[in-house]
Length: 173
Length: 342
Image 1 (tube, rainbow over the protein chains, first blue to last red):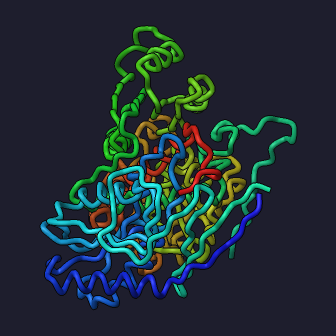
Image 2 (image 1 turned 180 degrees about the vertical axis):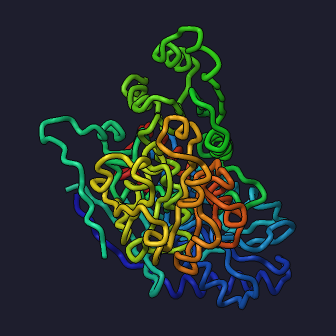
C-alpha cells in the first residue's frame, strides 16, 4: 500500500465559504446567527467564519464523541476537549460548521447534541469541503469546494494555524 | 521533597493480579483497583470525565452512549452516595439500571454469590457495579462473568474503592492543576479505609509531590510507608504546607474494639477544626469521601466552610463514573478503531 498526498487550497475555499454565508446574511436568510463548530477541524473553520462575520457572541464548540453511532463497534473515541456552548440555543438561528461533509453521520450526531442544549429555530450547515459518499439525507447550505473522490481517497484537514488540507490517496501496490 | 514511591514487587512468573482489568487488546474492561492502571489510563479517565461533567451542566443531562445496555448495581453492603451516583451516571448515559440490595435478600436466604451472579447474568446484564464487605469480591466476580460483561468495584472490604479515588484526583486536579508541586495529607482512620488505600495508589501514580498520612499508630496499617507515604502522628507537623487535606470517616465501631480511647480525644487530636485548618496552606482545600461525622473527625464550620469541596466531590463523582462506565463498555466494541476512518 502506497500513500500519496495532493494539497488542497484552503484559503480560496474559506474565502468562497465566507462570501456565500455573507450573501445569505445580507438577504436576511438568518437572524443574528450563532456559529458552532464541530471538533476538531470544524472549530478551525468556524473560527475563520466567526472572525470574518464579526460575530459578537462567543463561538460554540461541539464534541460529538458521546453522540456517535459507532460506539458499539469502535467504543469511546479519545476526546479532544469537552463541548462548550455558553449561549442559550433556544429559538436561535445556528450556523453549524464542519471541515468535511462525507457520510453525514457527524452532522447528524452534532444536531442531536444541539437539541440536548435546547430547541434552535433553525440550523444551517456550512462546510469547507463537500465530497460524495453521503449515507444520510444531509447536504450543506454553503460550501467552500465540492470534490468527487474515489473510495481510496480521503480529505485530511490540519490546523489550526496555518490551516492546511490535502487529499490522501491509498493505492494497492 | 518528593517521596520515593516503593512499588510492590511482583514475581516475574506469577500472573499479574491486575491484568484481569484489561482485555486481550489492552482495553480497560473491568475497574477493580487503581493498581495496574498507570498514569496514562488514570489521565484518560480524568480527561473523559471532564467531557461528562460539562454534560451535567446542560438543560438535558443525558447522552445516548449506553442506550440499550443494562447496568446492575449489586450492593451487598449499604451505601447511599456511591449507589445513587452510580445509578445517576448510568441513567445519564441512557442505560437501563437495576438496583439490587442484596444485603437484605438472596444471599441471606442461602444462595451462593455465583448463583446470584449467574441469575442476574441471565437477565442480559452488560455491567455489574459491586459493593461487598469482603475484600476481593469484585475480583472474584470479574473472573466468573460472561465475556461481554464488565465489572466495576464500588468498594470491597478494606481493599479498594477505585472510583472514589478517581473522583478525588479529579477534584484535586480541577482546583490545583498539576500534581507535581502538591502536598496532600490523608487524615484519620487509614487502617480500615479502602478509600485511603486507593487514594495512595492514584496520587502516587500521578506523581504527586508529597503524600502524607496523619493518624494515631493504632489506625495505620503496618508498613504503611511502603505504600509511598510520609507518616505523621501530629496534626500541626503533618498539616504544615499542605495543599489538600483529605479527612476520612472514623468508623465508630473501632472505638469498641479498643483502638481508640474515646471519640472526644480523637477529635481533640485529629479532628479538623478551624484552628487546625489554619496550620495548612491558606488556600488548602478540604475533602471528605462522606459520610462525614461532624464533631468526630471534622468541625461543622470547616465542612461547610469556604475551603470545603465536599459537595463538589459528590457532583464530580457522577462525571467520573460516567467516564469509567463508557470506557469499560468500549472494551466490548467489535471493531478495531485503528483501521476505520473517523
